[in-house]
Image (cartoon, rainbow, N blue to C red):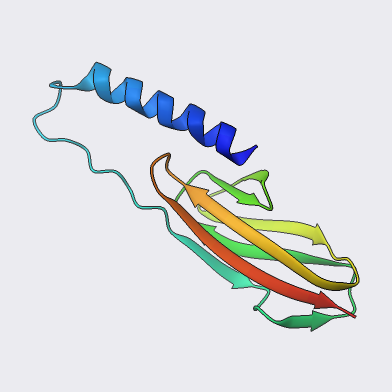
Length: 109
């Protein structure tokens, strides 16, 4: 799902680049995606059945385990269910050319 979305983003950006070539005195630099996890901390152990993944990014979207989530004012707070045992969450944020990845593992007892 994420890769299909990113392919559309790349195609759109390539088209915009080609259509806009030569229209500007200086090229607009591509923004490097930043992705920061504020919580939970990696290695967290809990008895809760649900937690919230909270963080910031300078992109409009973030993916958690290939599930798309919108970002508001650079922040996201995503509730996720926890299974018993180890739960691995892969967060991705990208601009169509570069992707930043953060992985966090939370254990439910």
